[in-house]
Amino acid sequence: MHLRGSTALVTGANRDLGRDFARELVKRGAAKVYATARRPELVDLPGVEVLPLDVTAPASVAAAAAAAGDVTLLVNNAGVSYGVNLVDGDLDKIRATLDVHVYGTLAMIRAFAPVLGGNGGGAILNVLSNLSWLSYDGNNAYAVAKSAEWSLTNGVRLELAGQGTLVSGLVFGPTATETMRTHASDAVMNDPVDIVRTALDGIEAGATEIIADRFGAEAKAALSGPPRGFVLETVSHG
Image 1 (cartoon, rainbow, N blue to C red):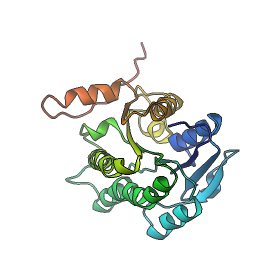
Image 2: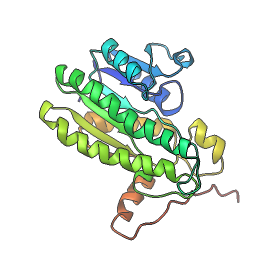
Image 3: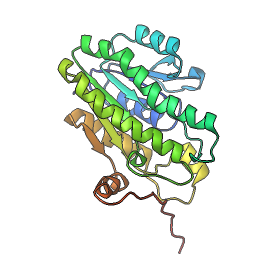
């Protein structure tokens, strides 16, 4: 897929990776970039078209699809991370995590699949995680949601192959987003811009699975062995 001249829609574009995706797409010559967020007033990027969007609200998703009928690339980036486990974690937060990452992603795909098909096929990029393949004691609700989103990505890829839509999953580990910097400031982390550039390079290359760093590569390799959890690496200070 060629990004120059494309029309992209990015969810969760008000900060972190979503903001970087929108900015990088503009730099790469996308004809139009819809930058969406639950609070659109927080989107401050030049050169984008801002739309309100809550991926967990059916009416909001439908309105976005109606307003953005020229989309050829959908970037499902919206996410939440509450840092809760499964056995003793707040059940409402567990449900909310699944609602955004799984049902929200599915809602966006269901709404935009006909749009993409009508515009020649296009592409969908789902922002996953190395926790799609690993558990993480302290945030297992997120790991479950990302694992389900990975399976969703693989299933949707088969279902949309007939209309020529590329469906890609982006897998990577700890990255210096606002959330990560707040909760794990000493962790070894990627530069978000590097992850975004690798992801968009992968889309242009037609890759179905984009493993953007060593954390993702190590998690995939570990699937051949017994199940294990992920442990954050910390920065050495001496």
